[in-house]
Each structure stands twice: as structure tokens, then as C-alpha cells.
Amino acid sequence: MRPQPLAACLALAVLLPFSAAVATQQSETPPSAPVPATADTPAATPSVTGNADAGRILAYTCQGCHGITGYKNAYPSYRVPRIGGQSAEYLAQALTEYRQGKRKHPTMQAQSLSFSEQEIADLAAYLSTLK
Image (cartoon, rainbow, N blue to C red; front, side):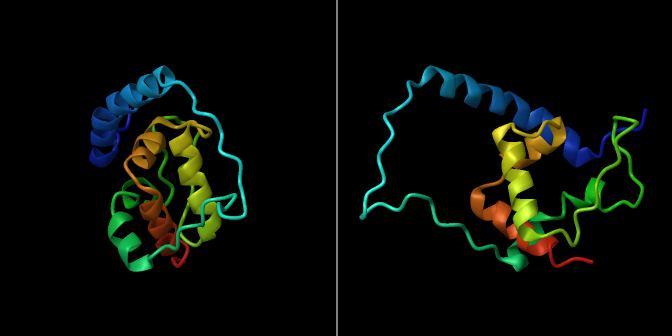
């Protein structure tokens, strides 16, 4: 078995217990009543604009898996996808879905939990510029 990159192992060890505590806390919190959108209140949160320079620094940990041509992770039938050059919208959506639990991959879920919406936008802006 090939060992996971150090950054992925550390992220799993540090963030997975945190995500379980957040999920428990969220399940104990009663849902609040939805606030209807009015003319004064926007119906949706404005999208965050990414900064590619800030994303370049954050993308360092992504290179541990996504920067190695032909790299396979611990699941033998799963190749790590190439993310450089993907559209910023797709990358931001993918990271957001990992963070929300809609996409299932323990390493990516742990990584995405460590990013704010702004950091996800920054990463997406930078990674979309790569070839």
C-alpha cells in the first residue's frame, strides 16, 4: 500500500474529529425559521471573487496529489483527477460540495473543511489559470 502524502494524513488526523464535532453541534441546534427575501434583502449571497495570487499560496497542498502525473490514491481503481486548467466555477463548486458532504472522499472533505468561501474562490481562480 502506498502511503498518503504527509499533508493529507495530517489533514485527516486534525480535521476529521473537528468535522464530527461540528456535525454533532449542528444536529443539536434547532433549525431557525427561514427569512423570506424582500426588496431590501437579496435572495442569494453574492458570489465571492477569487484572487489568483492568494490561491497560488493555498494550492501548495493540492500539488501533493493533483500535481503528480499518473498518481493513484489509496483506492487502487481511482486516479487523482487533473485540476489545473479546469474552470473556476467547476473547481469552486467541487470544493464546496466536498465541504458540504455532497461529494464523498475523506481527504478532499478534510481539505475543503479547512477553507473559507474566499479561500475556495482564490484556489479556483488560481487553478483555473494553470495548463
